[in-house]
Length: 325
Image (cartoon, rainbow, N blue to C red; front, top):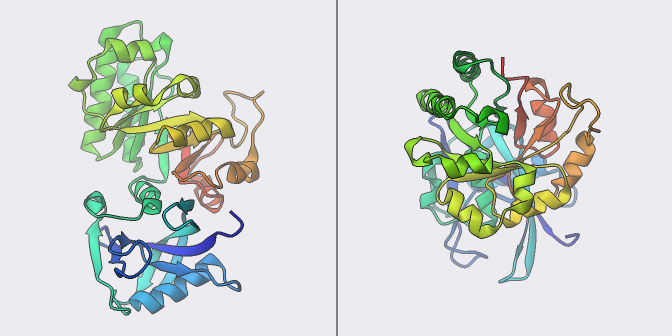
């Protein structure tokens, strides 16, 4: 990867929650496809400096503030070309987007990006753009009312991605399981939050999940290690798929299974697992360096760690205790 072409890419979202995309000239590499604007990083530039320069040259926009979104290393076999995309989400800018180089420019709703043809390397950018920076994993609860109140409280704090995690011990009362699923589905729909289900395999087999409104399935690391591509397709078809990872091997397995996103842990020590060694932010960053999908940092993290997570390549933070109160 040392000979990769480094490219700064801008994800510019306006006040209407629409993102700016442009059409590649037909004579260029991957011509005729839509892309997020940006350009090559020069040897004497940081990716942030390159982004500011390129967006001024391409769109006549002045970038005032941006932050890391995702870094993607991708090899194009058709042209034997490797690129490293340093993608930054633009937080503030001035000006009106114009196709300075004659390219077509369009503002598109984030939910409609799937209707446009992008280069393969851009697919992970779209996934990252469609995911929030905080991921709630449900924790312990005393009864259905306690569960409802804790989830409702979390969603009132602007949580937009929820993993309903049930263990074997939570599944003895099927009536309660159905109630929990109904409550989680109802509350998430009311607040426009995505709902992921992390359920024991035997429960997935026993339930008729078509009765519930949910967005995807989450596999713990044990399930991930024994899951095949055929099993995955059968399970989630048109749903999102995410997984828990603790090792480099598990991250690569998630990539092979075409996961939409993953969580990697433990970044820091946790009260629930005090004897489990933390990997630390430096190792976290090195482990996900060429993982072309959004990765949440899990383990001893909270809202206060979001900026740190971004600077180390993460989508954001995933947590139980920090959000489940």
